[in-house]
Image (cartoon, rainbow, N blue to C red):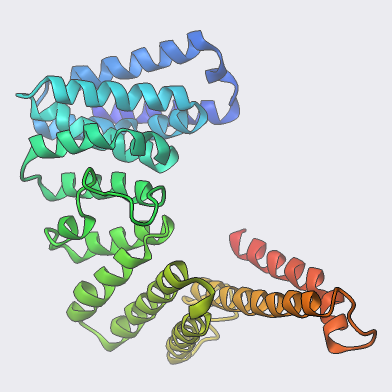
Length: 327
C-alpha cells in the first residue's frame, strides 16, 4: 500500500530532520539504505502504475537522506543506474533510475554530473519516453548545466530544448520554467516563455505577467553571458518587468507591490531589490576605479568620500530587505 509507504517516508524524514547526526554512523546509513532499496526493488516488480508511484511515495526520505549524507545519495543513484543498465528488458528499473537521478540531482548536482555517461546510455535505451520521463530527464540535467564550463562538450547530455519541444502541457512547461529559474538556466526559461507560453495566453493579464517573467529571464541570461558590458541592457529589461508588475498590481485596485497581502508583492520586491543591488554594484565599481586612479586618497567632504562611508550600510540595508522577503 503506497499510502502507508508515503506516511512512513514522511515520518522518517521528519525524524532525520530532528536528528541530523543519525546518518553519520555507518551502521545506521547501511540499515536505512538497505530497507529503502528493498522497498524499491519489491515495487519495481509490480505493474507500471504502482512502481512509478513508489519513488514519489519515498521522495521525502530520499531527499532528506540524500541531503544529509552524500554517501547515501551516491549509493542510491549508483544502484538505480546499475539495475537499469543491467536489466535491459525491465522498463520499470529505467523509470526508477530516472526518478532517483532527478531527486539526487536537486541536492547533489555534482554526483549526477559525474554520472552523465551512464545517464546518456540510459536515455538511449529508453528511446521514446513518455512526458513524465521527459520531465525527470530535464529535472536531472538542469542542475548539471551549472557545472558545465562554457565550450565544454555536451555530447553526453541530451539537449534540453529538444526534450522541451516534446511537451505539450502548458502547466508542465511553466513548472520547468520555475525549475530553470531556480538553477540559473535562464536561457531555457526565456525560450519556453517567449516561444511557447506567451503565444498561448488566453487573457491580456496573463500575457503581460508571463512577458515580465520572460524579460527577467532574458535580463539574467544577458548578464550571465556578457557580464558587466551588458549591465545597462539588463537594467532596462528588469525595469520594464518591474513597471509591468506595478501596472498589473494597480489594475487589481490594491497596493500589491508594497502590501504583503498583494498578489504581486513578492515578485515586485524581488525585482526592486535586484535592481537596487545591480545599481549599488555599479556605483561601488566606479568608486573602486576612482580610488585606484587617485591612489586611494579621496578628498574629504566629497560625494565619493560620503559614498565610501555609507557603502557598507547600504549593503546591510539591502541584505535586511532580502531577509524580510525570505522570511
